[in-house]
Amino acid sequence: MGLHAALAATGLHAALGATHPTPLTWVQAIVMGLLQGIAEMFPISSLGHTVLVPAWLGWHNLVNSQSRSQSFYLAFVVGLHVATALALIVFFWRDWVRIIGGLLTSIRDRRIETPPQRLAWLLVVATIPAGIMGLIFENKLRTQFAKPIFAAVFLTINGGILLLGERLRRQDAVRQLATRHGEVAPAGSSGGGMSTDPAGAGPRRRLDTLEMREAGIIGVAQVLPLIAGISRSGITMVAGLLRGLDHEDAARFSFLLATPVILAAGLLELPDLTGHLGKGVHGQILVGCIFAAVAAYVSVRFLIRYFETKTLTPFAIYCLIAGVISIARFA
Image 1 (spheres, helix red, strand yellow):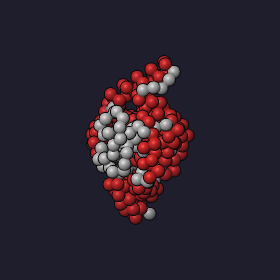
Image 2 (cartoon, one colour):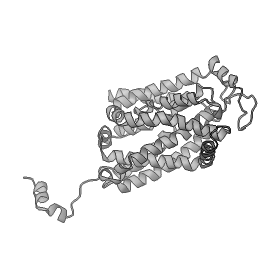
Image 3 (cartoon, helix red, strand yellow):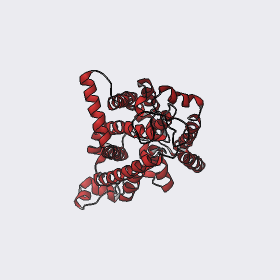
Image 4 (spheres, one colour):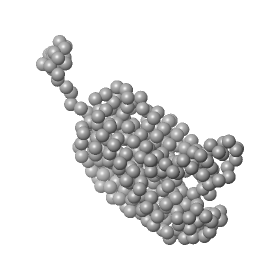
């Protein structure tokens, strides 16, 4: 019997105050918190980066824990998700006041008339399939594909999806879709009229003109980001662009839709954070959450302005390059 085992058997190990090394260091908590806050907002897949970055840095304890159904890292990620969702709520609080007010008045009056009421129900319809599919597939897909090589392959695919979305949005069918609804608005205006998308794709369709069926399709598309490497915001934006939205409104819908989805996923798994999985890493979780929330707030503030005039192309190129290099590294 070794010394460690002998001490443990006699109880002297605890009496001497010996401790096991923490499974999550403070540096890892800060880096992964920042990474979650940035990558969740940018269309580059936060889940993919939380697999690839630790692998590149040699943090094998994090890499190995991600493919387990139960681990300390799961508790950590739950905390980061809640922090990210809270940052989105803070940034969009005015929108959420209007949306929740619109939902309540719509239920009371039993009709949908105003833009806030319509947007509220679009979010409800898009959230339902995303929530159901998340409950059914999240754990299985996370444990099966949370490996560096899979994340690298799907990150490359994500780049291809973003590029394809940018190309398809310029087709006549998409332009005609926006024009046919006859409810396009000048940049920065909530009124009617015809204008040109700042990114040069033609008339822009207002967000609240989406049909419920279209919102449902966008919600179904969100099953793909359950795979490490596929971006939630990227998929939602591409789906919105193909329905005639411009980049700014597609990004806004993506962030609004992500809020209840991320928050609900975090709250449902909150027992993992407060239970035995979080034991010994609560301090690191708190620090990671603070960095994640700040990074998410700054990122969404930047992206809302960025997408007023810019496209998804730079993010697509990044995903393709990072994905191919990572494939070469981990194949």
